[in-house]
Length: 115
Image (cartoon, rainbow, N blue to C red; front, side):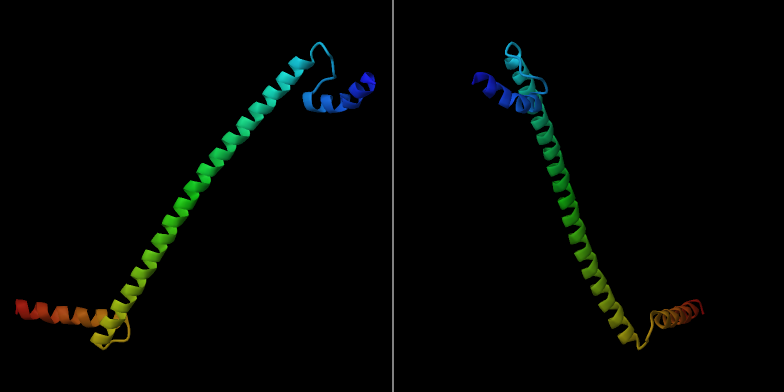
C-alpha cells in the first residue's frame, strides 16, 4: 500500500521538484524547489512593482498633458475672441487687411513726425 501511495505521487513530485522521489534526498530537493519558487515569486513581485511605478508615472504624465491641452485650448479660444473683437473694431474682415491698415497708419504717423 505504501508503494502504491508513493508511486501515485511520483509523477507529481517530479513535476514540482524536478527529480524522482528518493527518500534520502527528498527533503533537500523540496527545499531547493521551494527556494526556486520563492525567488520566482520575488522576481514576479519586483516586476509587478516596477510595472506599477511605470504605470503611475505614465498616468501622471497623461494627466499633466491633459491639463496642458485644456489650458492651451482655453488660451486659443481667448485669443480667437480677441482677434475677432479686434477685427470687428477695425472694420476689417481679415487679419491681413487689418495689418495693411496698421502699416498704412504707421507710415502716415512717421511722415507726420518727420515732416
